[in-house]
Length: 206
Image 1 (tube, rainbow, N blue to C red):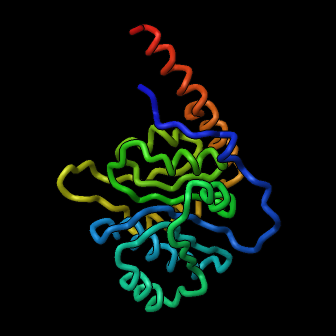
Image 2 (cartoon, rainbow, N blue to C red):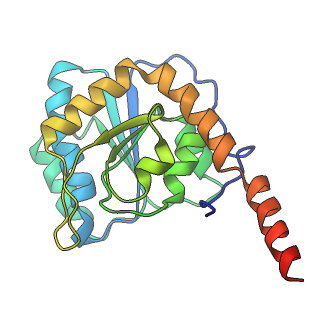
Image 3 (cartoon, rainbow, N blue to C red):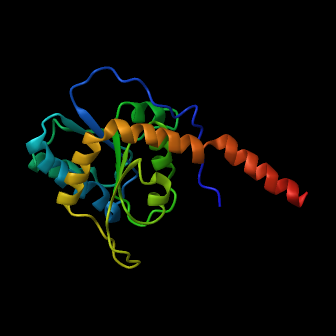
């Protein structure tokens, strides 16, 4: 079994200049049926910002119905605390990750998302729904998995309080998790190892 692979020499941790805010990042192409991936995080973010003013949320990617999310953000008065980056290229991706401190994905029963691997390679701790293949990608030291029930008919989402507590834990243990994330990416997801193993398999059949 080979995981998706990336160039770990391209997706690298950047030395960040001093900044006031701790930045959480979500990357995704969101359709209406998958709004839960952002909506629940925004609710948790709203609760956390009452306790910690020095946090910011960036959402990068294409969103099917932006008006719905913008309306929610305005109602919660989070306009100054949430930034959208509309559509980006693969060339832009390493720099988008570089500006963040941690990565969030609430995708339910996802298999092997490359975005998670890219974030790990950039040294970002992962806050995720403990479902599908993501727990196997992240491991025990590189992030925090939030428990959800296994269900193949109905999407399961952690509560906003669980997400909020996960964000707080990520902030507290960021440095340790960041180091573990980078080490894990290099060990398991580097493209050179992926190519090498494919060469070995193809040679067996030639």
